[in-house]
Amino acid sequence: MFIACAVAAAGLVGAPQAIAADAHNHGAQTPALKLNAGSKWQTDAPLREGMLKIRANVEPKLDAIHGGRFTTAQYEAMGKAVDAQLAYIVGNCKLAPEADAVLHNVIAELSGGAEVVAGKQPVDDRSKGVVHIVNALNSYGQYFDHPGWKPVNAGH
Image 1 (tube, helix red, strand yellow):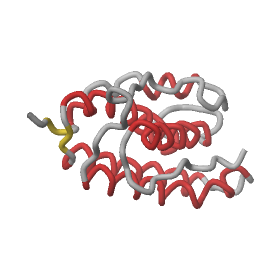
Image 2 (cartoon, one colour; image 1 turned 120 degrees about the horizontal axis):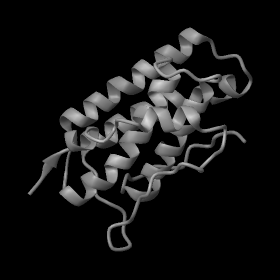
Image 3 (tube, rainbow, N blue to C red; image 1 turned 90 degrees about the vertical axis):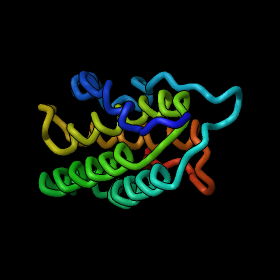
Image 4 (tube, rainbow, N blue to C red; image 1 turned 45 degrees about the vertical axis):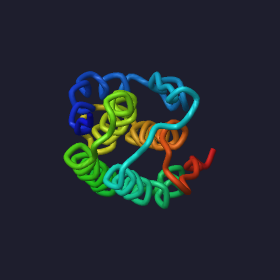
């Protein structure tokens, strides 16, 4: 039996606050994830498409973010773009219940990061949200079977 990824959205409350409280500390708040009996979880086309679009929206901008050249408007646009892809994923992907439960952790971190990046959560540095988005993208690649997926190089 398959269920929609919408279940993943149910636990997003609280994620932005945890991210806002987190410093520029890579990996400290990585969600608890697990493999499927030692193998990566299966994905479907909508999940892969949405994750590729999130990555394409974030990765090319990391140099400007690290260099302090990313504007408030650019952060807001990035947050909206990530949110749009998350809505697409939640509305369209269908995974087995066990995979969906694990994906929930990735979706929560992406959503929380997008809220910080978009300015929906008060933080002193919106790049903290980008750190969480990158961590979530890398967790996705580590735990989900997405042919050709490579870790995002955070640049430091």
